[in-house]
Length: 206
Image 1: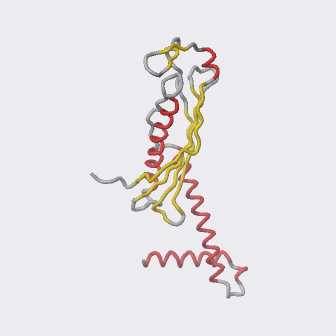
Image 2 (image 1 turned 90 degrees about the vertical axis):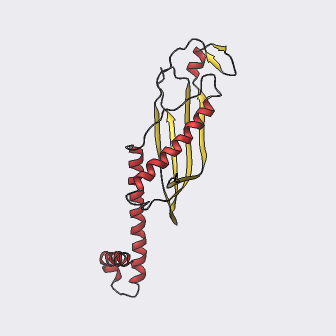
Image 3 (image 1 turned 120 degrees about the vertical axis):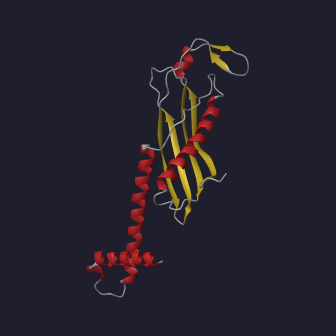
């Protein structure tokens, strides 16, 4: 057995909101059942639950082997639904990665697995919090983030951020290289491209 190339080093719950929906509470009569749980005596079936997701993350700017991700989930329940709870949660996780190309071909696998790990943790937090209410605790369904727009959007955002950072670095480097030239301000595009090509050549040699 081998360790996973993605290790969760730690996490914290950034926010947690949980409430019994007033309309459900007012319409219900409760009877004491065996044990500590109170259950509504008249409700046999509960309406389905809809959840909204949001999240993302990326590598540490100084160490790409360490990543930070966050995941938000919130119940989306129609007014007329008899689903008993409203809840929302945001969780933040810190990961150590051992992928060969954490910013290349392995990135999508990294993002899917990291988001899945946070979701598994979020399920337990929601189940624990809601189990203290008068209804049974909420067990969120298992989901796959393999083709999730959540992961795709996060990846595109990180690429844009990385591209912007590279441009800023290239601009700063170009200014240093051309500081002694009198025509620096007249030819910034060529200077930037030259620096970029020089970096690429240096990378290929290494």
